[in-house]
Amino acid sequence: MSDYLLVKKVFDNRPVDQVITVKGWIKSLRQSKKFSFMVLNDGSTQKDLQIIVDGTLSNYEEVSKLLSGSSVEVEGLLVASQGKQPVEMQAKKVHIFCANTEDYPLQKKETSLEYLREVAHLRSRTNTFSAVFRLRHVLAQATHEFFSNENFYYLHTPIITSSDAEGAGEMFRVSTMNLDKPHRTDKGALDFSKDYFARETFLSVSGQLEAETFAVGMGRVYTFGPTFRSENSNTARHLSEFWMIEPEAAFFTLEDNATLATNYVKHMIKRAMEQCGDELEFLASRYSPDNLKTLEHVLNSPFETVTYTNAIEILQESAKSHKFDYPVSWGIDLQTEHERFLAEQYFKRPTIVTDYPKEIKSFYMKLNDDGKTVRAMDVLVPGIGELIGGSQREDNYDRLTKRMSDLKMDPTNYWWYLDLRKYGSVPHSGFGLGFERAMMYISGMTNIRDVIPFPRSPKNAEF
Ligand code: 4AD
Ligand code: MG
Image (cartoon, rainbow, N blue to C red; front, side):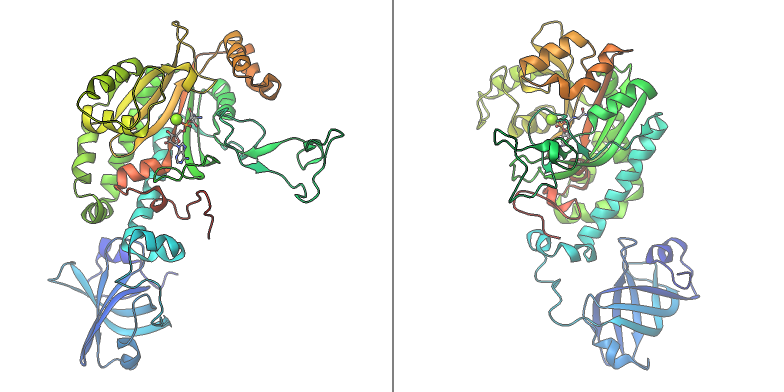
């Protein structure tokens, strides 16, 4: 391990006039009789290392014919350069790990994002995807840094669960029952008491309910894990498996919650700009030229806040001159086109919409005194729509059980959740940020399948 340098380290430390060893994959190789130019990348940085391979090398014949994507180890002298990069290498020895054949699936002519999804196992070899996934790493680190600094403890909530945290019925079943001969009750219904967990179980849609149990004991916690939804949404913004960050804090009002969300999003942008400048520049140049300017602007301006009721008024007024596919009236669930209109065209910045009608939100949100709206907040951002969904939680036992019975939910499944409202109940709030939506927003990539290593969506679970 210690016998070679990451390309990132070569550029960070620039050990000029020293003989060093690097290892990686050939981006391109231009050959001539006397020497060849090799462009090498090892995924540790956006930058490629230029290597001059002299014709006097003992295996020059072989090396000069290497195709892109081949893997090599190169020992050579690092020298200062007048070229695009400050340093380049003069090879003394080239060891070939694997010489690619002509049928290597990543050829210059075939690099559309759609095509690359079909060879997702090789995507990390491209400039685009190594940039995206270095950024993903930085945003994940920034997440832990942010919440830890805000005194939130990282909590690992279960992935297998028996409760529907959103009450939306979009869960994947977890079962070891024999599908040909499932256990049945006398009445012929499936008998889950004989299943692995002796009850119905699912993959979690959200760690919120479990996070709440810890927030009302440890004060502030957050989750960061995979969540699963079987919703049949084949869009550029939905996945069946996505990662969510869910902070939950005792004694937080909705306003505290909104401030936390704002600061968190800004912190991620700040770290992305500090630590992924090359990546952001590269992605902007390819996919969204204005992205850096936009991020800068978001970082330096407050988010807009508007109630759902005001947002509806704005949309109705705007509908006079702007065509919406879905008509707007009080009580509708905002469609992506409405969300994007508000953030992109009307306010031109991230926008926090609060106090939605209770009918379109989950059972656990705190009812306002008007009896009609709940203390919900969605953070909408230009280009994406909903980035965050959150709320102050209903902490009143009677109101919560009433709401659950209105929704025909079985309270016995939520006995432990209801206990939190019986014993030492306190006002508390939290939200969920879709990590891939944040990735899209900050990277400027427009399809959610391109910001997660192996996307899962309806009819698609390859790799
Ligand atoms: O608005 P949602 O459904 O809220 C919750 O799950 C709450 N339990 C969060 C909480 O209060 N602790 O989801 C939160 C966020 C959305 O705003 C969106 O960014 C993302 O998760 N999201 C998805 N991302 C990708 N694919 C999907 N199918 C998503 N569904 C939600
Ligand atoms: Mg939501």
